[in-house]
Image (tube, rainbow, N blue to C red; front, top):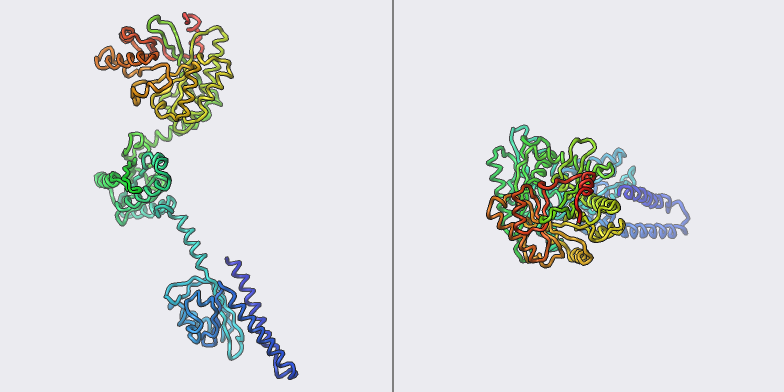
Length: 604
């Protein structure tokens, strides 16, 4: 913009001086009389062209002023810029027309200094006054003609900067505020919080930071559409702002996450009261498109100075507490505790190591046999993933690293590795003559979200020249219930090809009997929680017996998991359970141990 103004200024000087020079060169008294009329005509034509030129500049306001700063010229652009017509402006003093009160004296002095001493007025950005009283930002440049005569004329060339200023304001707003809710964004919010912390330090006061994350907001977006989701967030921002006091802060830090700061609170009771107000506000339904919608949110709270002394530290710790609250279920609330953060750091370290586990050959499969309850013969093997980091002495528990892999998406790489390794090992056992034993692998819900998961499984079987009966899959009830129609179609295709499909941990998910008849499954694996006390508690025994009965009535093979004592085995034998799996028979074993067991066992 300033480059364009500089070019305009050079152009203006050139035009003005050419016009002034034309007038100065032609002196009628010094030329022949027959040329006077021609020269005058040239001058008038030049004058006309000059005026037409000035009037043709829609964005450049030009005014001419005499020695006393009275208006002698006012183009149409000046009228649009300042609101005065040429008739209204002509004859009025510059300082009484568009100069703000605080600039009057300095402007008059600058004009006199130019007329009397030849000190030019520097071009600059200023704010002048519109007829309405509003300020108008302009880039103002001045040219003085006849400055050494008795009738100097000053021309002001003002370029309207309103659009540029508005663009700067819009850009500044975009840098500092969220466009949807008009709340400060994270960067601006952190700066405000740092200032608040400095005040707290001086006054020995406390504050609380609350991190709010709307539960299942992605599902709300999917169900209602993004426009309705945005309306919900805007309403939520307004409602949360209502819970603020004048000294409090609030920000939308991401799509469905807000951070609130309550200043001047030091006691847990005060914080709990404010948290309760926010929870109460969230419980009221939101009106979206004429329909009431109820939502919940996970809340995490950190306190100054107990949980941090900087804005980022307090926000991070509130976020950590919020993530812990989400694990408690919908609408959870947690205050930050240091061990939450320590655990988060440890998990992140594990994730980083897990990302390299395949390349470092740290993964292995252990296998746990499933035995016939009637004969005691080994029928199948369940493949179980194990991970022992190269710099560790012990295995990392699957209960710890599998959920991490699920949350981070690493489960796809791990799942592919398990699929490939189980098929490779089964092919090796078959080649060694150990036939008739099926290997089952577990597929997680996150894996099943990938459209080609089952196609990859089929391709893996073919790549290792395995029959559909050689490798089975295990899925939880929840995975089957939430599976897309395309996934269920793929499962039906595998079912009809003869692939064994088991419902794992039966009884711990939705456990709706109406679903069972629709699923393409061949087996039920009754969860170990029903086995644990079945030989001691009649109610557990009844549940176990019912699960086995239902499985058989549906024509399914039933496997009892977690068999750990002779009494349990006797019980499931009386109930005519088909297969048993548990520590009473065998723990999960490494490949070499399994192979020795298979070589010495009676196989189907």
